[in-house]
Image (cartoon, rainbow over the protein chains, first blue to last red):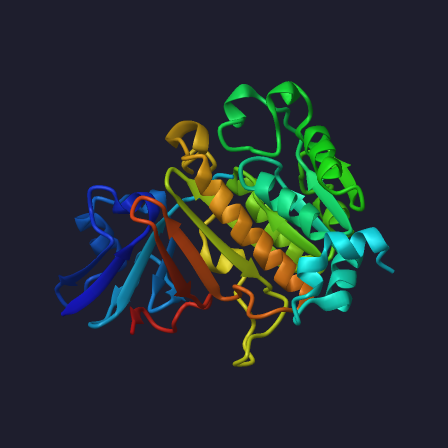
Length: 74
Length: 254
């Protein structure tokens, strides 16, 4: 199934800003993070189609997954 | 009432149909507090002061250091070593003597946050650590105060408005900070000291945050509630992400 992954801030460096990915059925957000070499502990916000999500949740085809790092400087 | 001098000072506001004399009066009557007088706090405080926000609170327990000055533009070289609240207060009063500044040279904690923030109509968070960010967000939720939250690192930043005590157009409760963001150990979070920050980035996000605060005071336009504006200065792109807090039911996200 196809999903769209959007990365934000420092996660873009050496990766991409937005990409369509072909992933197996049953793929979780944590699986996607793994393939991107992003550690769960470095993630600040996860949204699937604009709705807050947790790493262990499974994705459906066609969704947009947005991944933010822990940006908290001032 | 606005004095003759104030009418002149704010003439470009007053000529705006959506502000006018009543809007400028509302700004003068408003009490807005800025947590953190650093990179984000600097432009926020400058624009609130210039706009004529009548009472401006500043919360910061830090002193000005040389490495701050590349981005914390409210402070100057002669201010090194001074408390940031004192330096910022002097700069604000130089800019606009019609403004009252309330300086809180303290670090917010669970014992004082609600007491300090309850005295204000709008809260703006420009702190540099997640512990304070969540403390401020929790206090604003309990006090039912709108919170303009902004954050920066490297070439990036985000800004949003949190009003979790209110409902949105669909009748559901707006999400809280905790409903959209995980509170990390501060050791894990990216800090400007460790990762660096291009000086103009907090300038951009700070002015966006100040604009949101002025809109909230004036009841103007659409605040960034349930919407996060993200800025990437490397390719100079701005994205707006509409978000909801509640997780979908079941394990599959559709």
